[in-house]
Length: 243
Image 1: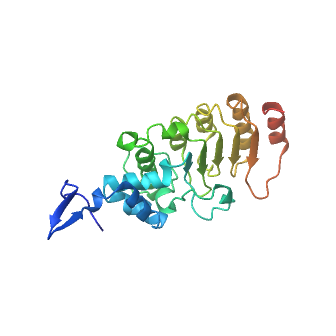
Image 2: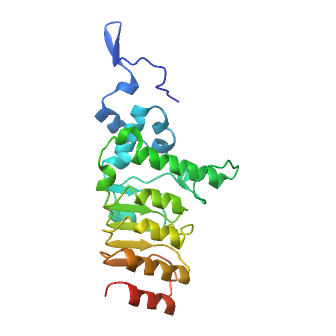
Image 3: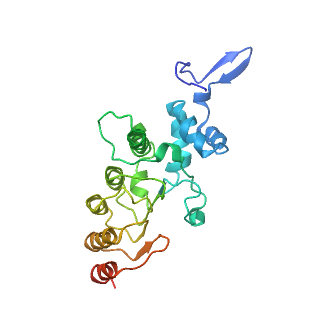
């Protein structure tokens, strides 16, 4: 693995009459072109950890050059062709089953939850916000089925993306009604939402919360196989969502 740490901070040096440039000091656009040919999994797990300059280029390529926060992985069962061109994320680093906490644990899901927190911080706040204003420009957020995102993760994201208009919240299994309610209060301009698998009772509660906090909502999609609209959910839609 290449490691930029400890190398000379000078941009180049003279070797037998030839100017040699350190990898860490290569032109930004050149690095971006090189990294665009690297598999996304490798960018996330390996390349971005080499040094801060490489991580900056990785995040620019994967995130900062789009008005989308895409946490999707390949083959989640959703038609991602409408978002073609946006990078997918590596499932190995993103699966989470609990909210990020401070306690130590050998549980793999605790570790993954912390890794997700660290990744989100790095992308959304690290490096003095390399692309200042990027989080404010985000219009679409994609959270796949496979990502068991917690209330704390969702709230962290929502507090930094007030301009959101389209939310694909397909990974809903770990989201509580209270957590969902807190998050959507930050998304007052949300116009469209996709929800993943929910129990009928939880679905009705989510709909009520959308009615309370999402006054600009125009479209609700339930992305779930064998979905049956029960009486409780139908009543929640009729009573809470715009006609």
